[in-house]
Image 1 (cartoon, one colour):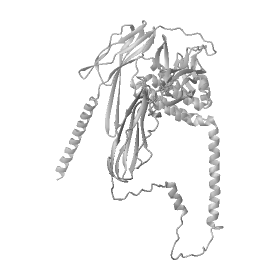
Image 2 (cartoon, one colour):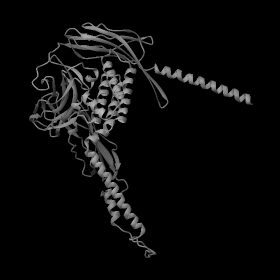
Image 3 (cartoon, helix red, strand yellow):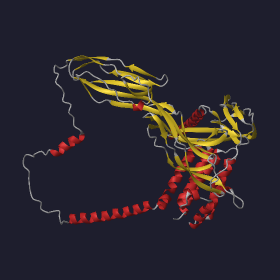
Length: 610
């Protein structure tokens, strides 16, 4: 018996081993079943003589990479390959991602517009082609002369309100974009003051939460641009409507000449740089709003765009005092959110309740679109044959510049006598608040023996009374002291910033981790810099505009931070700086920088004394 049990145990162990191997094989097969993506990424606009990268990103392992012909560009380095992999287990499900990047370092040679052909890669014996790219090469422009203490000209940094049109009809949408244009090192944007858009009905268009810089060619000059805001405007009156300028404060970092040799750490944290705070504003805009033509249909209530209508009822035959549902749906594109509720005429024998309105509307750069549905509950009171009339809707069609009228169908309704009574139902209703009040107002009389008797011991003056009195005083004093401390801490802005420093830094690091997972190295380094610099700025109470290496080191040493921690800080900065200019970075390099930055902030948190 013991031998059988032993052999059975051996079989079970052997089966478990095969099952594990089978699971690994199945998992491995599923990893390679993912859809292959091979994408080319580069700058859209570069200047003559400028160096830039051309990356080909593959979400798998590949071989036999065939790069494209790069006419019009000088190849300075590449193609160099870098690989990264990541394995994660979520709810027992193992997933593995493999990424390969092929990188060229190029230099633009001659002005013009160039098309980069597709590259080819082989994955598991099958060839895949990347997308093509268009790159514009513009003339290298000289810096404009400056007229202010910062050394910056009006052409180096500005914001601009950009409407998609300046002449519109009353009720026609305008898409308005606010963008910043910069040729300098923009560190931060603060105190944004957007226009109030008087005379317009405003609808926000969703924009990315994180501001990212994109290159644009503006009259032959390359700018880094960022989208700050985007809205839809619907003019509410005719004439020339003025949109006031937008305003914002910009923190700009500018190199300054200094004595001695500059090191990488100085570049990273402000040594060799000076920061300026500039207030910039856009130009105002004037929008010409034209009146709609005068030959308006009687059913026109201000709809401008392109629309359709439909209607339906859930029942055309019912008994008196039963209810039916009647729906009207208005769909289309235009000022749909501003539409007035339909004015309908129902038979006099029908009780009609206020409609339930369901809006499904989205805002895009081309206008608002979607639908509005009105749902009416109708209750016929008497038998007979009735008709719910057609709903007539008119709108101004912008494509034809004419009014159009459309109608829904009418519905015949047959109401039977039902139970033989046609009495009118009392529709008086009470709210929850009314019911609650009635419940308090009425006191019921209790019948029977009451068993009344006098209390033997009064509460006033008793031990319980004294204890409750003392407890109340102690509780009041405790709350008073804690509240005083809370108010004092809140009033101390330096203390508040000090306490929140780590929390804000962790937010930055989380964002850097997201960029790391998305292989966005430039944004990754930027968030690592902002997270570390912002943490020290808050922790050491140094204004961001005045943050320099000398100030930081001085404050850190005052707080007894060890020199080896400062050396770690310098090493982190050097790693970031070297990685930024390296032809390619591995995922392991980025991971190391990310982990080092988190450890460093933790060490500062333990070492810095208030």
